[in-house]
Length: 158
Image (tube, rainbow, N blue to C red):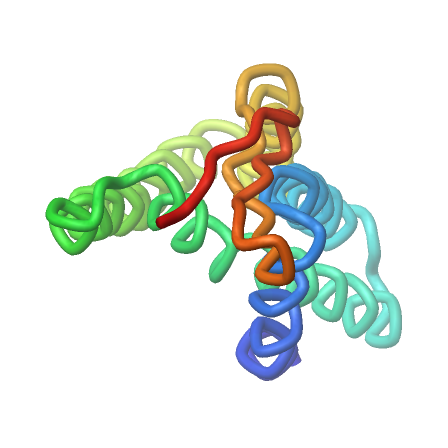
């Protein structure tokens, strides 16, 4: 369920981030992912795990395409591909670092506490992003031929 909901869901959340902005989806997705991971350590029944997996998929679908869009929003066009590559390097290295951290925590405290800790770190990251990230989406108003960033300043296109 998790990868199916993530994969199909990001088709909608990517487009949604073009309409409502990046920050809210990134923050909400990170917090939802973290809560879902914590719920997986609390729940014991099959249907409860199904719901936690659904929430994890929705959270990942909210975050995955939106981070890439945010990188594209702030990178200069001549460096955009490299910026996405640097982002992917750090993001993908997190899989290895996360696996090592989860293994160390599982050996020390058990699997449930390890997963709950990773969930807590994910919630913390979402809250950190809420406090530190600025919205990156620039709203386009083609009818007047200008760009209106979320910050409210106007830039005229030529």
